[in-house]
Image (cartoon, rainbow, N blue to C red):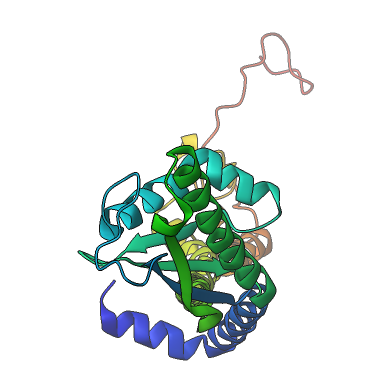
Length: 280
């Protein structure tokens, strides 16, 4: 089916296409309303030296940039994510360190504002705790230890509606396609029904014409009658005109007087013996 036929079918069955399209729009709005809007929360921290007089403070892992990378690896461990999830927070957070810097970024995407803020706050606190415990285990003097300072506290950086718009677009495209298909199928079904209604009449008319055109044969099941008066055989009463003609011929035959026998046409029997007048 080409584009022109599809367009004609949709325009002709607009009363099917438009209501379905309106239902599709309503369904897309319902899906958009049911899809929660996500909040992207972020925070930024930096590793600084405990002794301000030290230019390059080291830890058990080396310099500050190396320590930041180690913290990223530790916080990305599955057991740490499971501990965060056990508190009812978001498991899929992100921790990344800037290249050759001691700056660490924390990002979490929560369904609600409170969930996102709580998740980032918990991860920042866990990073500070891991840094302190590992330096203590390495017997680093308190004055030589690195500290983590929060440059930007957890805050809502962006309201993400990507999932909401994506779901609405999917519902809209599928609904519009189904509406178009329903209109085309309905138009085809109506056309077939109209064709089926006309076809039996045409077939019956054609069959009647064929019967009138072809004379009946003895095998056709019609009973042939024989006129005893005119001696014709095998004539079939197929119509009122022929019956009327046969009736006229029969009446004419009944009104015809019987023929007078001709004298001498029949030989009298010869009587043997004497007659009544005595002559032999």
